[in-house]
Image 1 (cartoon, rainbow, N blue to C red):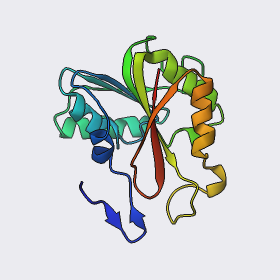
Image 2: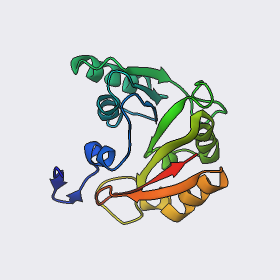
Image 3: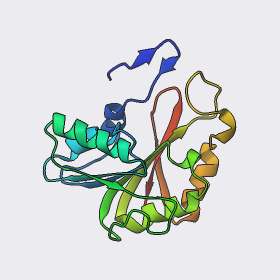
Amino acid sequence: MEENQNEVGKFLDPKEIIAQLDVAVGSVVVDFGSGPGYFSIPFAKAVGEDGKVFSLDILPQALETVAGKAKNSGITNITTKRVNLEKENGTKLEADSADWVILKDVLFQNQKKEIIIAEAYRILKKGGKAIVIEWNQKESLVGPAVEIRIAQSALEKMFIDQNFSIEKNIESGDFHYAFVVVK
């Protein structure tokens, strides 16, 4: 595995995360709160030209960055979309249309976590999966205040309450925890 090490510890590496998942070529992936595309770009490469990535964010400048990175990398299978995930049906995508949903550092910063989780469930196909990545609750020099981070057990319960099954934990560096859920 490629090292992404600095003086404070090993940070999250999207390629290492993807290597632990069974993401098939041709998959439809939806990146909730994509930011500048830290996960959208590597997932677009993983699913290949026959796959599709929807990069969703509320901030137009984040989506412009994703589009620019995709263009500069010759990636043509990313669609950016400005959305409010805290609204019911916030993605505006069809039900049962996605193979994967990415929820990376999204839930700790939103008040309406249940609506976001329900939307992931709505758009996933039966058997579809979500990768959930959040800041762990250890004090660190990076990341948000520990008080606003979500315990993994509490977040897993939120997903179970929305009819997801927990599939497995994923290795995700020193600052995050990650797990896969299945619809």
